[in-house]
Length: 288
Image (cartoon, rainbow, N blue to C red; front, side, top):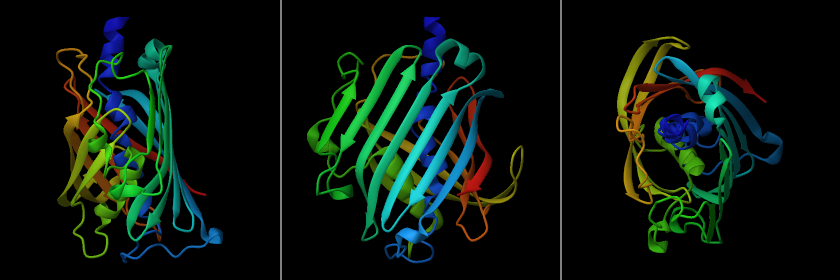
């Protein structure tokens, strides 16, 4: 049982970390368009989108993600609900709910709050972060509450000075959306984002890999391919997983013009976790 639990832990980032960067990149919706100015929407023009993704490891279904995006007048709210599936669900019953609220000010992403609740078998894990008046990339969280504590979790504490000038993972997804579409005069998929998720400090970088055509299994057609990588800084667990497994260090994201009048949506994500390739596929979408 413990061996299988460690195996599932090796999928932790695809389930609860970088998946947000892949799946929420659709956030260009109405906020950036072809201009670098702040969105001019009013409350009556709030738009919402729900996306459903399935996670596969080694060809077997391992879980699913439901994403909800809501944009108001210069505000955003992102929620991501993730759960395991199949044999893995029978063994460890992973559940995750993440929510971020924030503002878009002067072309900058400024989180207000970030909450995450995770459940692994009977182990409860959570993160609570709140941001003060100096929000966004110039600030960082004003407070951080986590469970379990770093010592119990066998990881180093991220120093306060390294938490400054960072944003949370879901807000990083929003910023990556601007990068994926080439915001203003920026080239598509070119960015480096400083992230603090309550436990870990890392940078996420994006590189443009050009346009290509994919042929299924869920989407067929022309896509833009972006490469993403994770640069570790501090706060990663010292508790090793199975020898052949590894933490996610990067991946490939494919974007498609899927929804009329909306910018490109991520339709596929791929990464190597050591035990095999993990894929995340968009299976349904609904404008609300």
